Every structure is written in C-alpha cells, then in structure tokens.
Amino acid sequence: MAIKKVPGGWQADLRTAGRHSKRYRKTFQRKVDAERWINSLKAKIVADPDFLLPVKETRRLSDLVKLWFDLHGVNLKSAADTYRRLIALCEAVDDPVASRFNAQVFAAYRASRLDAGISASTLNRERSYLAGVFGELKRLGHWTADNPLSRVRPIRISQPELSFLTSEQIERLFVALSESRNSDVKLVATLALSTGARWSEALNLRPSNIRATPGLVTFTDTKSRKNRSVPIDDSLSSQLVERLKQGPFSPCYGALRMALRRSGIELPDGQMAHVLRHTFASHFIMQGGDILTLQRILGHHSITVTMRYAHLAPEYLEQAKKFNPLSAWTLGGHLGSEGQ
Image (cartoon, rainbow, N blue to C red; front, side, top):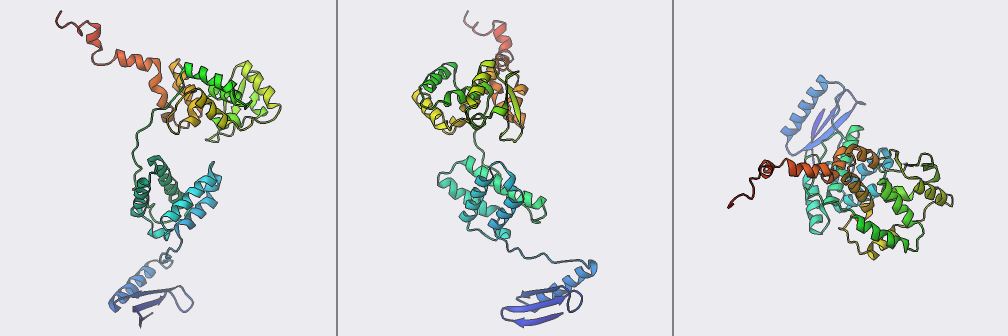
C-alpha cells in the first residue's frame, strides 16, 4: 500500500494480497481522501476476498448496439434496418461513452428531432429500439447498470382512424386494376382482400403454400414469424395455382398505388400499404364476424390490436343505441313530448 504525490493530486496504490495480486490505483485531490479510499477498499476485501472494483466503462453507445446486434438483433425480422437506425441515432448524439448516455441526452436528441419535423411515432420506435438494446444486454449479463431509457416515457399520440375501402371504392379499384399493365397486381390484391394478408405476404406466396382441397393458403413469411392458414374459395385457389406454376409474382406495389390514384381514392398518409388488410378486417366485423376469429386470421399476437376494429361490429353500434342513458326515455315516448 502506498500514497504518493503525483501531478494533479495524491495517488493511492493498493494490492489485494502481495506483489502479483490484483492492483488498484486511484488519484485524489487531497491526501486524506486517498487514505479514506484505501481504508474503505481494504475493509471490503477483508469482508469479501473475491471483491473486485467495477471496471471503468469505456465502451461507446455504438459498441453496445453492435454487441446487441451480434448476440440478438441479427435474428430479428427487420435486423438490418433496425441496426441502421440505431447506429444513426448513436452518431446523432455524438456516440458517447455508454455510461454517460442517460435520459437527459436522449430527451435533448428527441426534442431536436421533433423540431426538425420527425414524427412522434418514429421517435417512439427509436426509443423502443434503444431501450431494448440495454434491456437485452442486461439480461445477457453484458450491461449491469440501469437501463437509461427506463424512465423516458413515449410521446403520447392520437391513434389515427384506420382507413378502409367501401364496397363502391373496391369496385372502382378493381376496374383500375384491370387496366393495369402489370398482370399480377389484380390477383395479388384479390388475395389480400380475401384473406387480410399483408401485401408482402400475398406477394411472396409460393405454390407449396396453397392446398386446392380444401381451398386454403398458408402464409409463412409473416411479421410474427408464425405460420397462419386462411380458407379461400375454389375459384381463387385455381387462379393462384395456375399463375404460380409460371413462377413467383412480379413486384406490383407500384401498380397498386397507381390504380388507387386512377380510381380517385384518397388515403391518409402512411395507410396505403395496409389499406387492403384494413378493408378485409373492417368488412369482416361489419358483416358480423367474430373478433377472436379475426385475430387468428390476421395473425395478431395480442387481441388488443384486433380490438381496433371492434367498434364496427353491428351489435356494438346497436348496443350504443339501446343502452345509452336516454334509451328508456326514448322507448317510453318521453323525448319530444314537450309542448304537446
């Protein structure tokens, strides 16, 4: 054990058990602080011979993101895109030493992004991604401190009304699809509207995913990575089998976008990609379909997501009329009787 004067203060130097044992050194402004540190450290070593001081964190935020990606993120459905977004976030906050990254740093970053016009939903996803990095590394034993984003709440945003096509709009769309130069877009749209499939799921259908008897399609490359099967009518099944004998569908999302434009259908920003899926779900519920069945068809992990369509159910609407607090007055003829 030794305490010596060095440039900048007093250096405390302690070995745990002899010349070749673990060595601890730390510099203090005052000699008395160095003495206190050595005495405290010696007491901890006596109480626990295996005691080790925490190693100073030198990894930067991007190092943790890379470690998370190698150990966990690489297995995610959108691995490359998520990693790209996280690295961009690291660069935007000047890639600090990970131990110095905290809620205040992220809050300042988020505020600047909001000022730049970035949507709240995008920033909520970034927060979720980065919080997941720290959480997963902590579970794996590669991060021992608290999750710096655990106290950062997501921005509250109003849930937008999900747009769906009316029967008249569907008819107009199919007229436009029939005029498309892309020979696949109408069949892919028909499959999506018949099953509630995401556009990518319908586009990536393969012959092995179709059972002719009974008519059934199985979607395998799904967002949840769980296979799901949906019945289809015989006519659609035959069309799919014949078309897919020639090979996979050609890319046709752009053709769908052009058909929507030609048909004069206007949709809120960001809803075109799933409008056919929302249309299936909305019409399913409006025609009396069961919400739990819809959950299985759409492949939602949580019923909470499927409940977005519950307000369209006929019985839901009828109950609002039947059980509101004025319904008894209405049925009893009390309303509208004044002045008679």
